[in-house]
Image 1 (cartoon, rainbow, N blue to C red):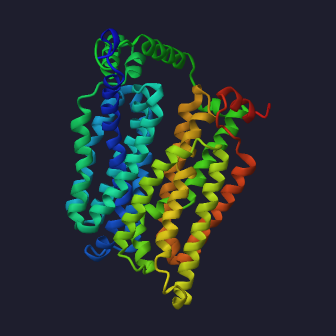
Image 2: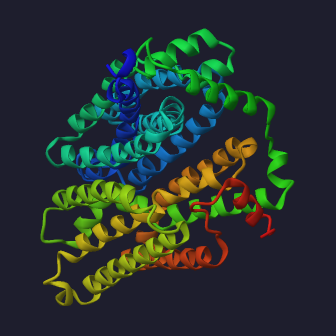
Length: 458
């Protein structure tokens, strides 16, 4: 206890940490969904006899499920609440993993992937909203980073399990995180901001006391800020029409969607979804599953590093450097596969090169192209259209994720692995050039100043 009976800083924040970390288990669960295709691809082909086309659909249908969840969440979050929406996701999440574990018909597997993608997408929409509303402002950013960190942890988790577990147990083990989430999250209250928006003030006060360490906690300032935020939100309503009535809104939307294009068309999800098959095709000296685990470790570590470095320079600088580095890594991968096909002796002693290139790719991705397109969504739009604009940008992201993950196998079959990687490299370089010349800098600028620059008034 602190001075005059008030809870200490640690006690005040422990409930917030518990609730936020419980919610971020949803990010961990989504990471397992995204990473599942990599270790599962080989047994799906060899044990179940699935074609490359079917496996590509098992990868591609997941983003479609996530897109459907995002559209549903846009309606349900403000109707049933953040807590109920998140809890309702856990049972079908487990059911989807059980379908993948025990069903062998391709249609059932596609349903399982769609359902797990839907549930993971629901978490990616609802969990950050919930965390942002229950956390104190000086720890909100750190807790937000935890979600992305747990997501990369989920990818690493499924890579590690997939090295030793058969297909059935791989999916069964992936059902554990959503079960653990449900058990832990069941004991946390609803978001006070949601309760205030529904005129349930007494419940909001009780929930806010819980999040701030108990009934003796001083919640006066937090409650006043939340009530002001809810009041302002009710007074300002945004519509699709508002997206096209000002130059600032139109340009902001173009930048937001353009950054999602750059992120997804850079090819990041082929590295995550198909890392093991890529290493198999590369003929690396290490076991392909071990290579995938190394890639997963690098992704987790680079996500931590990005949290420390990303505020040290401007958004535009990091994005240009990130995309340029990713493009260079894709060029190296393309050269390796080209030589392997036409002059195998030239790469006989550098079997480690694909692993190094993919690790460098994910490192540079995590320092800019990964986190910044999402961070800038919160900076590009005024509050009255932020919800609509964020939904459009998020929808574009998942649609592009589907296109990239579904077409990778088809592109490799049609043009070869080398040319496919060079295509992604070209996109990275074009995107870096566009950002350098056309995207405004938003770091350390007030929202009003950003809107003026988007409108061309400064």
